[in-house]
Amino acid sequence: MGIQLLVTGLAVGSMYGLVALGYHITWVTSRTMNFSQGQAVMVGAVVAYGLRVALGWPFLLTLFGTLVVSALFGVVIERLAVRPFFRSASPAWLLATIACGTIAENVAMLTFGKDARAFPSALATRPVLVAGAGVYPQELLVPVVGLALMGGVQFFYHRTFYGKQLKAVAYNPEAAGLMGIHIPRAVMTAYALSALLAGVAGLLLAPLLNVAPTMGTIIGLKAFAVAIIGGLDSAGGILVAGFLYGLIESFVAGYVSTGAREIVGFAVVIAMLVVRPWGLGGARPTRRV
Image 1 (cartoon, rainbow, N blue to C red):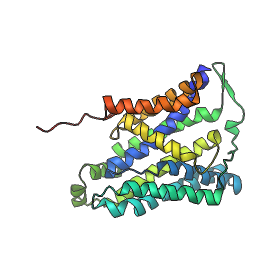
Image 2: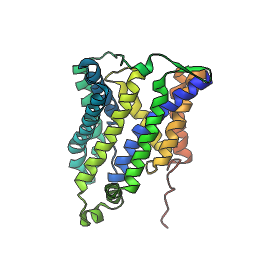
Image 3: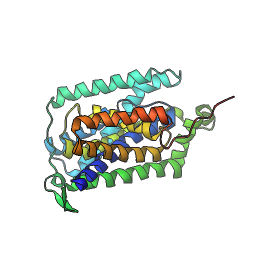
Image 4: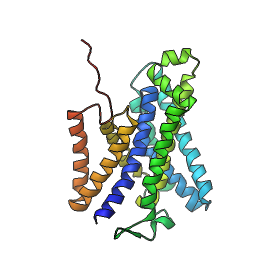
């Protein structure tokens, strides 16, 4: 049972970390966050279901279509809910992104229906034995893909020219603009990338959780908790926090109860805010005297 809980915790935790990385990307680029990240997870899962199951597309085309639609979802969020308020430094983007997420969820209910549907996958049909415990290959695949994508995002931000431009926008937008960086395009790219990561998470989780219009709400909330625990400025802290959160949830649900899982998870968030509000990997803010 311990191995099963460990694999499940790592799989779910890697997805929390992947979605939380979306919060980090938009935060370090524009000091705004996409509070429709959970709905971006749902969009990825619903689109993948429609392309793969309803239309019968092959997997690679389904993957490509899901990535494109997820990135477009991020672009729409940026154009409608963030850009009008970014220049004026108004915090109205917070409510606007929540409103867009709610609209997306209701549109999905109208088109997809309210009921959850199983996403058929050969990797989630027959368990394999790992150290005596039966786990689905999909559960083993999820953390591997999650880690690979997290590494790819870090490479993009720290080793590519355009990634460094996005970091420059976060550090000083005015100076970045004077250096010729197109600020609105940089912010839009960050939102597209964050939604794309969430869409991949939805595609990977769909065979394990079933697909439903409301599936992203709690995932987005927990991913935000992971971002707070890890530190919004620290991708590494978010990675560690994602795995820790997933493991805590899995073992509490397995050895105590599923109800206690939510209590313990969010209690950890409160404890972190009290003890170390800048997060596991964040830097303690300096005080001016």
